[in-house]
Image 1 (cartoon, one colour):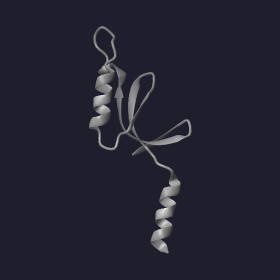
Image 2: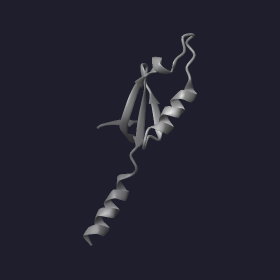
Image 3: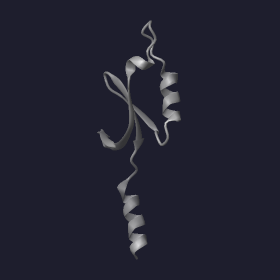
Image 4: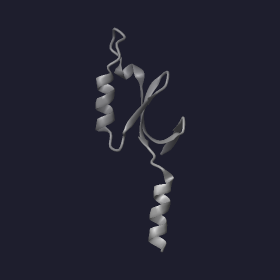
Length: 75
């Protein structure tokens, strides 16, 4: 499992797919296919793009929530 930080948001990387897999022979990018992949992959809620690939990621929620759960468990 790998993690990625983009701006101030942290993500869990689920899959990385080269952009050419979403591009037709005429060079047109099929963003609907990217959306279908995003919706198909479990827990993926966001897609990041590099020069060569789409990265399908899950947003890591605020850590504060985890601390509250731990405190409640031990009290």
